[in-house]
Image (cartoon, rainbow, N blue to C red; front, side, top):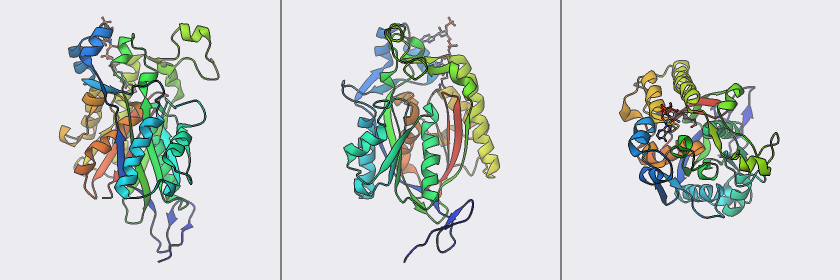
Length: 345
Ligand code: UT7
């Protein structure tokens, strides 16, 4: 049957008048082999396992080893899993969006490099920098490409090699972050499944609390910036924590209210994994018990744009068609948001 796509100002419909939504149809993930444990960090900085576990919920994180390995080397295996699961070729990918703040290089984009490594010869793509909200921003962007009716297979990845920008002599940040990547395939759906709503927020006044001081156009790399360790993550933990606890919880609750979703309607909360205490606050605000919250921070730490798709990857076999998922994130920028997905398979 030939499907004709036509548009009204807001929504896209197929020839039968059905709205096109962007459904996730497969999930892939990749975490590096190497496990950096709390015990190992105790030997590197003045910290201890008990402090890390009680303040963050983290026990270990994965680290991508190898001098010539970058973020694209985690995106590629995650995407290959998707292609195998859906039994499709790389040449069928229309677009690859990579949420990341640790691109292989400033340019070309990680998406560009990953498409080449994958053999995705018909794809275009780009990187999207929204720190820990990178996957949510990229997912909403990718969903819009599908909803427009113009693209049929869009892959959205969240991938960060945080070990590349962590100062392993700074105990306030090195205990938190890890490396990893997750990815989802988006395809058109006319049965009401997929990405149904997103509330995304941004507030640049929070930039000074969580950022990298140098390496951009304002303060290019120099001997001075390297000597001053300005190419590492700089984070003021407490203000970030306060904003994260409030804003991630508020936006998730607002998304539920806007869409008349009760706590009973929500099957899973898929939160950014930055700190278990932030996740608990969000779940409480939404009225969700712990059993409905995806949590793997203990194993992987904070992989920035990787956390949410890595949760989807781990929980994929437990998800059922029709499940309501609320994805929620907060990160550098500040950036934050929440997305409602009705699971499609
Ligand atoms: O994903 C992107 C967004 N980022 C976040 O969401 C992170 C938000 N922030 C946090 O998760 C928390 O603020 C941290 C985990 C970073 C820090 O936890 P905290 O409970 O806010 O600790 P704090 O900064 O208030 O520090 C409390 C104490 C301090 O000692 P004093 O001044 O009370 O003597 C710190 O020096 O803990 C000390 N401390 C540590 N002690 C042992 C800080 N880091 C460590 C450490 N080990 N690794």
